[in-house]
Amino acid sequence: MAEVKIIPLLHDNYAYLLEGSGERAIIDPTLAQPVLDLLVGKKLDYIVNTHHHWDHTDGNLEIKAATDCKIVGFEEDAHRIPGIDICLKNNQKFDICGANFTVIFSPGHTSGQIALYFAKEKWLFCGDTLFSMGCGRLFEGTAQQMFDSLQRFSTLPDDTKIYCGHEYSKANGEFALTIEPDNVDLQERIRQVGLLREKNLPTIPTNIGLEKNTNPFLRVKNVEEFAQIRRKKDTYR
Ligand SMILES: [Zn+2]
Image 1 (spheres, rainbow, N blue to C red):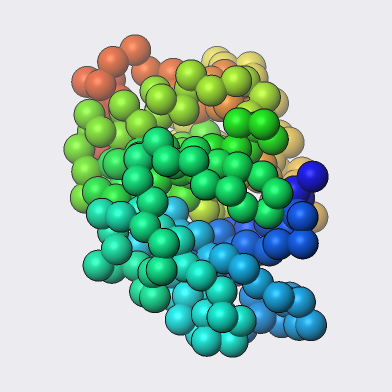
Image 2 (cartoon, protein in one colour; image 1 turned 180 degrees about the vertical axis):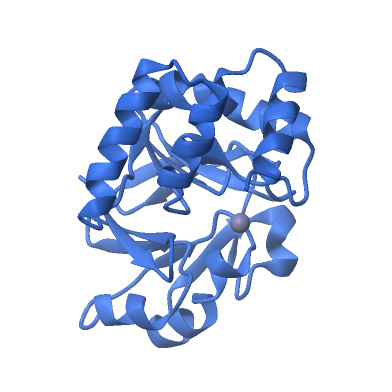
């Protein structure tokens, strides 16, 4: 059985260590050194990048040089994922750490963003597409693309754990409350997030069911409503 370990990096980034069946993989290494410190005396088989942004790939080359791991990413981002060895296609299945994920192409934040969906384990590693109570900024994609990507995620089982790229829950919750001040589930989630952050603990993983009840970007009825809330968030404070 594969296991996930959360690796907080920089101010609010999350990388993840997967371990299972004698294999190890790192998802989205922001930096090399803290990851290498964690791996002392252990082998690393793969790095997987959800998208090309520096805060998800900057550790790639140094970690690869130190561990001889293979770097895995989306085929359309091959030109901008440092050190890529294995190019994934949309809907492709990939065996890793005794588990298997399906590539879900989910553009919006970037044009080559992917999510890794582990159907058996019910894990979704979605990079900067879906956050707890929020979603990624539209750097290279349209509102329609992000809306479609989020709607695709919402079809996954409610108990699917979401491992996203950043700890943004507190700020996202404050904004979400301006959209739905009377949402009791949202109020309770914000309270729980506050308790976790007081102890400097991650609020991740969240899950699909919780997000359907609390995330304004998943709760919109159509793309127009989505675009309106996304614009509001872009200029919030
Ligand atoms: Zn990003």
